[in-house]
Image 1 (spheres, helix red, strand yellow):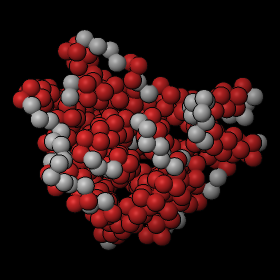
Image 2 (image 1 turned 180 degrees about the horizontal axis):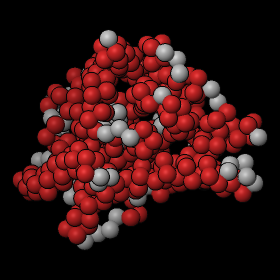
Image 3 (image 1 turned 30 degrees about the horizontal axis):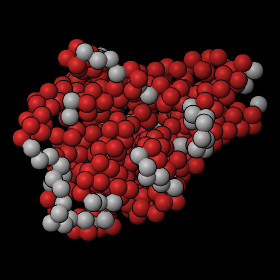
Length: 403
């Protein structure tokens, strides 16, 4: 039975990552999960446990992306891009904007909304659309460890270990800042603004009507963002989950816009997460995850980061994190090393995270297809040093706290 359960997980991860032409990525894992339950490869109590771990995270995902879409439709992200992406500091400003959107809204929203925006900016300014369009994909990994809401993996782990915003800021705040900074320096060195700035560069917004629209979008969008930040921080202390905060903000925008953006809800990603979650829960007891998390001291931290980073690139970071959940029950202090490896590690390979797969599909739809090797040539230069630097900071923090 152990071999069958592990095989179901491996097959589910493979079908999710293979870019089928007509078959959505969620279909394979969802069907395999149903089959595993039907033939009792996966016990029903295991599926129920996986559901408890995933419910809050998936609910947030289904609400946060439509919320970000409505903000995009009023021009909020375009207005921010107009203000941060000017002059010789275009790419640095857009790098910071992608980090902000990833942290506050989550990595999938950053990829869905900012990739088309950045490609449009590149086209207007005569820039390289692939290089500029890659920024949201890179920051979706580098900046997604700051808050629980920044990444689906964080929310899943929080459901199991019960840590909050303060814990994330203390343990992963500085490593994330270092990863964002190191990645930004390396990205700008690889693709400096000076290569694309020219006297004929076209500003993003030229007329007074456009500037007035930008101001109106900011007046509406900034209070929503402030509400989200306060809600995510204070809400957990009074028992209000992140999905309820996002849902409240979404409801306000629906009333103001008189539009329900359910077609933008990532139901496919939710089904993919659910299917992989059930398969991973079934296989987790047959893999040496507990032994890995039980390694003592700094070697254990390094081994955990390295193993989760490699596992994320091999089978995708979502099942990689789900496999660690039973081990985290006995070793909850290793949650930070698990999340750092699973969140930043997928920077190296396009199939390592759902967000980068989504980004690849978005770039293809926009007429700029990017192969896995094409992505890796840029991403490895940025992601590998950023992961190494963030890991060094995490290990130093652990040594100081234990010393």
